Length: 328
Image (tube, rainbow, N blue to C red; front, side):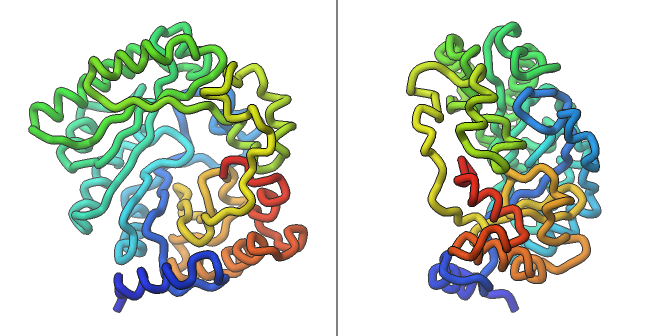
């Protein structure tokens, strides 16, 4: 029988010192689909160069299979990765199922909130989605649309108000709403206006500097990324993540802490990998969790991060390590 106590003990003992792990991760990302309604310039989701990658949405049946496999040990789920979560019409049923099976579970969603149905509003509030981050990088349509191609800031505000109204009507404190503002060169001028708007709505606000092309960053040196994407990088130091090009991490702990499950069951060690089929570490619709978690690819990844020859690793973590890890 699975033991939470043993899982905690093994995690504290092994940390990043072992290749084969006796514990399982408490946080996992499950992608509801890699399809998006927007075409943000630094995201690969609607990049023509990535059109060969298989697109799809996670079915409720497959979600149940994946969740039942990780239920004994998972404490937090990010119910998103690439793509827009609310394009999946089953997302409300996924939240309801997970919460019924494990009431203490915490579920997070990050959305551009341009598309959400009234039914989805009711289900995320009624079934206690814990946190909803709303990615909205502007107050005026002119500024917002420069990066969120195809989106409408008016739609975001309308949907936010629908959720707030549902929370009030259902007397629910959840979901905790956070206005997530990525700061670019073109939208720096509206940060404070957005902060004030969030205050008026009664929701939290967080502003963070943008990242370079998130589909390419693990495959190149940071100086090359910055040279290509410099037009987007904000001025000054407050929101500029690239004032010092020596920003890469010295190591990465993700293969010991978490993983991401693609919409079709493919598993990758982190959310920085878009082509989950090419770089898959296994598949939770075909294998047990422990077969994947302690499979050949995960063991190789942990070994290369601990010091093995990256060139011989044959896992994507070797490429990421050679390029300085950047932000992942």
